[in-house]
Length: 213
Image (cartoon, rainbow, N blue to C red):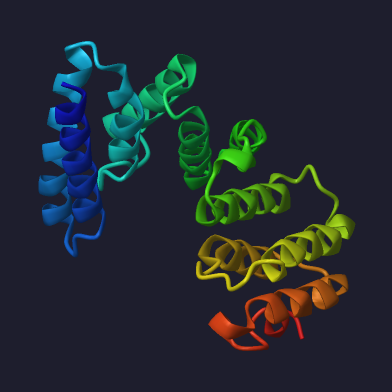
């Protein structure tokens, strides 16, 4: 029975990944419905381990936008997963992403602070740290004078890796937003140069510094 469930879950995760990388809205919606139905069936049968993948599947749903049922379903299943201890740290990470997507930066910050980064692999640890940084930059709780230190600390994390292979898309979007709002002070330049050095193999040597120089 255990081996059968493991095989079923492997298939379900493959289906979720296939849906995530679908090229069109219709294809993505059609594909994500398949694992959602199977996960709901497993959950209804008492299999609580379906909670995290079900929340993640709704997180990947193309209809997850303001006012949609998918927003509530994403939150509800991820919160249930946390409560039941089902992949709690992964559930917290994607719930934090979910809140960030809808500009609920303070809620996202509260959740991400509860994630134990030590149980995450390197890729998810980087994503967690990046999300944490972006929330700090966007909440308004941090003074703009603190931005250089926050950026430098993150640059040090990336520089310590053998070779970062995840493009910092969320950080790029956040810094561009801050720049457009006039909230990226010139005092950040040395830290942005550190980020360029950390990501030099991936992005070249002057992307971040060009934002304000």
